[in-house]
Image 1 (cartoon, rainbow, N blue to C red):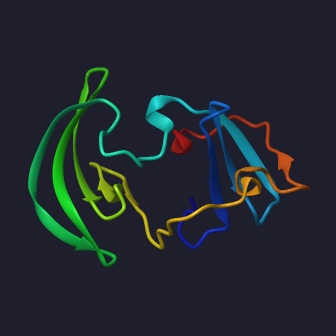
Image 2: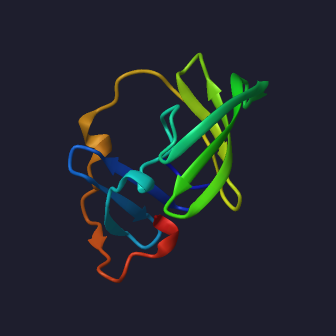
Image 3: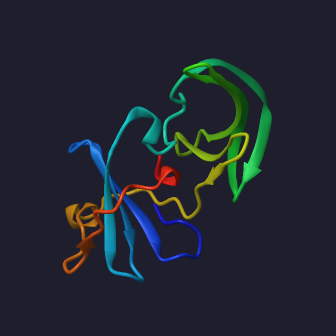
Amino acid sequence: MEKGSTPLYTIVRGDKGLFWQVNNAEKTYIEAKLTPDAKPTIDEKIFGETGRKLVGTDTVNGYTAKKYEVTTRKGNKTEMIQQWFSTEHSFPVRVVGSNWSVEYKNIKKGAVSDGLFELSPGLIKDTSEVPDVLH
């Protein structure tokens, strides 16, 4: 996953239970535990989901998608989330919460090299505290 036009990207390693947030401009990375609520929003079911309502269909970045209103609960907090789920890719192409959003573009099906999920040589681990924005 790449984050906008910034030189940041995320490598998610479910097999290791962690993810790396890489800052290519500074050649550094942050390592954090991959908790259920920190996982990328790539499944149809959202972490903490308590209800789901189909509200229509839409096109997002050229992908036909079913639009859902999803109710989630984390602790005492309830949030209404909108999700556009592409049936072509079995993948959410847009997810919008109360003060955040994720949109996937340039989705490509196919195999990738194992090296794509490894840190590039020469990166330095940033051992400062992981910012809340990564969770």
